[in-house]
Image 1 (cartoon, rainbow, N blue to C red):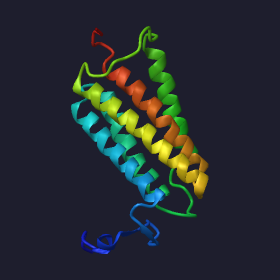
Image 2 (cartoon, one colour; image 1 turned 90 degrees about the horizontal axis):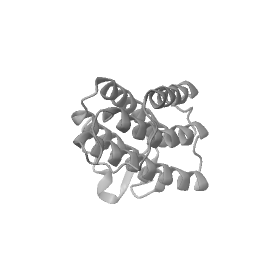
Image 3 (cartoon, rainbow, N blue to C red; image 1 turned 45 degrees about the vertical axis):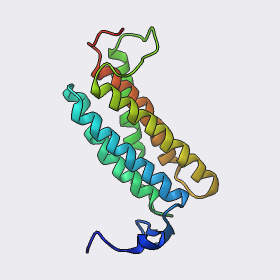
Length: 169
């Protein structure tokens, strides 16, 4: 099957289930923003120096592929699971417990990885806003909304872990 389908020439695409949908539909906009988030995380991973951070980002990218599939599928059992959400929550708690308390607002940009992690964090927030708009208009799985809600916190804590030894101005 060719990557060029030409259905987009008329403003259409297909959901994961094969159902045709307008390219500017909010559902497509939502999983497209998650796709953008995955790319932003890839940039952060490319510049990260902390091996734990790199590994966690790689795992998150794979999970975001499943999250996109959830948004690109109507009425299907979600691929994101409660266990995946709990694992991220446990990682956040573990990392947060190992870091000193924040005493000031962070201004990202001390390193390239930090800048890209913060860009990914704000992209996650944008994806979440899109998902909530979609949820108000259609069917969105609760687990997908909760998972997406944790991602910005997760990226923030990974940013802190990545730069834990970097002096702040």
